[in-house]
Length: 253
Image 1 (cartoon, rainbow, N blue to C red):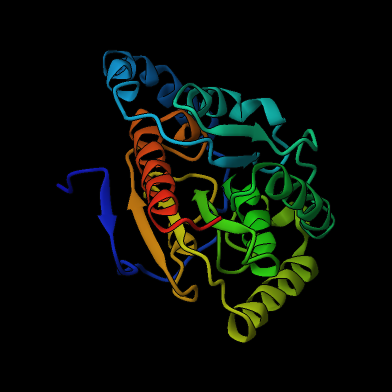
Image 2: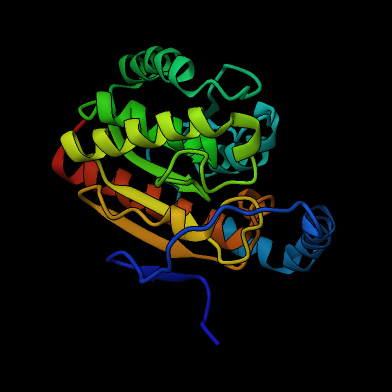
């Protein structure tokens, strides 16, 4: 049995992604896993023993149809460690990634101007798709992307939401992303969390083989619990601490 979390410095082997085809058992399974989060309570004190760093600017982007508040626990935790963490300021993610990409560009530019440091983007599921496209356009203002169960292959094609988007829109988005990855691969570092227990996104679709600098992290949680997983929080905090330390050492902003 794999010991998790497990970090892969190069993309792990994975089968071809296959779209989830049924909601059967998904809701019940996710509710069970939410209840299991109580088992993580004893591990919470270790999260606050991590060193505090400079006020790195961090913006957090929710998943499809999820309110901004779903990421509030994570951004409050990061604030407690000294990071300038905030929600994306656009409310619920209604599933218009191209519009939201353009809106978030302005938010990143504001955060960059305010802090004088590059911005870290953390996106959950579709939020990670949006974060990637912003970073593709603003590589000199984005320090790193951190994605949580984000499909990077096929757009919504290999997700439980594919029927809602429709075959034509899935195909358009998949082709658009593939062309962008070929013509202009993401140049900023990426930390991509994925879980083989994902019931919403086919986990092989979360494996990034196109971006220039990617670290994959496999975790135990599910699609709807990954944003509350203490192991995920600890890895994010450690990654951000290293980012802040490197910026301080080099004088980069």
